Length: 448
Image 1 (cartoon, helix red, strand yellow):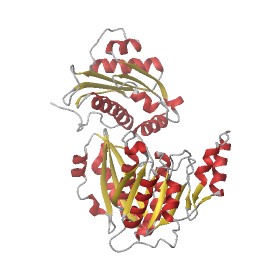
Image 2 (image 1 turned 180 degrees about the horizontal axis):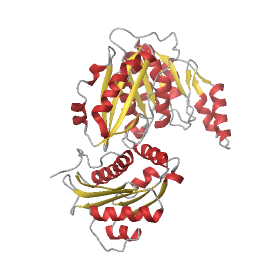
Image 3 (image 1 turned 60 degrees about the vertical axis):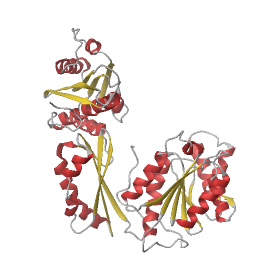
Image 4 (image 1 turned 90 degrees about the vertical axis):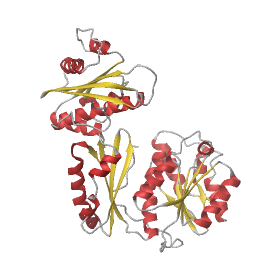
């Protein structure tokens, strides 16, 4: 949310002749999500938001969004309505092996065709189970029963077969409800087909910048007019805020990969220049991945000490590839004095201060043999959680080039402070490793 990504260049798959390109007013797309758990609100429908956002990024707008429960009559009516008004319909869910998975059955009914066994997909599923040393349950065979006119859409990471077919005037694309399976199928199978069917140029490139410390409004002002540097091409600028990070996206489309890259290059360089030190990663990189790459390049390793953040910093670092070499250990405590004692400090200091954070980081580095140590201490306000609730954050990084200390005041509620302190701590470590200032003002702190 990590996320799946739009391929740098979308290759085009052949579309059946029964679904000609849409011209004129553009393609009308409907997203139809199925499942009682979605309809009743027991499961938050993040799949819809992801699909709608992805389509918007490539210039395909969603006209209708529909949610339907696991009911044959209602599903059939929804399929028929979508077939009468949309050019393309993406159906999400209902492709599993259980009795309440009805998408294949009702798609066949809506199209007036029979279900037929896809030997191709049955073989794929059997191989899937064999590779894992398991016997395929008999009810999984249901997932290989597809409408007779269906075109298989590959799902390399699951047993739910996606498929495409024409119902009425619309081309339907059926996707699994498992988010990571749906996202991969959307990017690799469906978006390329939709782009070709829409008549839009089919070579697409999306460039992403991940930043911490600036909000959406500030980033918008910093990047004002940057699209005009596209050199005759068209670049679309967009933002997605997911605190504590902000994702800035550039989308370019063209007749060839070379043309798209030429269009993007000056814009990308200017975005890097304007956002400056706030850019913590690009494209599929993560903040923790960038930190590990820098540590690896220096032949180093890190240890962490956290107060109030509950181990969220260690949880971002320890599971990464290379963690056995690059991450020494993480210490978690809720009390400042306890955190100090855990690293061997002969002190009863109870104040989560910058001085204590520095002492903890130094002791942690010395005791664990790590090249770098990060300490994040938080002194919370008293009283109930509220918008004004905050805390004083004290961050220290100890390394071979000395110490770096970063105090900050954050507020907005307990969870807001916890997430902000986690991100600020990791970003300070990134900046230290890169030789950047750690005390650059950010939008998420309160300064006197």
